Amino acid sequence: MSRLAIKICGLSTPETVGAAVRAGASHLGFVHFPKSPRHVEADHMRALAASVPAHVGRVAVVVDADDAELARIVGTEAISALQLHGKESPERSAAIRARFGLPVWKAISVKSRADIDGASAYAGAVDRLLFDAKTPDGAALPGGMGLRFDWRLLRGVAVPAPWGLSGGLSTANVCEAISETGAPLIDISSGVEDAPGIKSVDKIMAFCKAVSAC
Image (cartoon, rainbow, N blue to C red; front, side, top):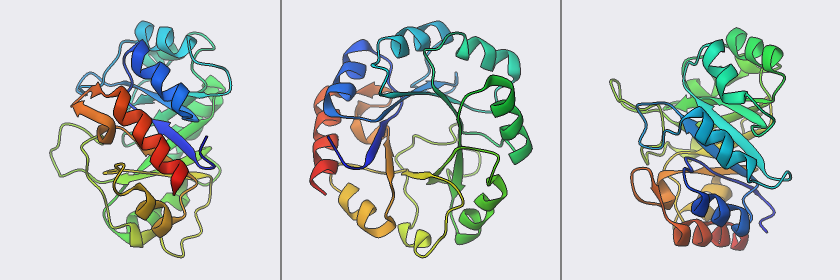
């Protein structure tokens, strides 16, 4: 198992969930956002998460969801954290954490150093920050598009919360990403797919093995 935390995001089948667990992933991500090719309905998400061993985090990924939608997703104890991947403010993020009693992750879209510096507004409001590449204006998805930002932007940054790195990661570049940023958690989605939304068991296994070797 890797010394670093690994989140495999956008899982939608029992086969790929099982592969991620066997490969040593520390967290599994389930996307609930209808515009995403990785979208799973709330009941399906909870069923997938319920099969995951308790020591592996089960993260529901949402985009500007209202409280009613979040309540449907959380539902049972199957989900162990909520990842907010929209335009949720620090105040909204803190309110979600207080209402639902789960750890909250907040994705920060990064194009410039100012975006990273702006993450400090979430200090105390969320449990983890996730630095992801900013998608082009007008893009249908806020993430999961295989884009990466300039990892050098994270040099010397004192991140005000536990954090992770996402965006454009692959088996080929993950060691570079870890070396450049010192990220304690690596989050991958499209980099372990055969097509958008279609995860590959072999690519999941290879990615986790590559991280372990970094």
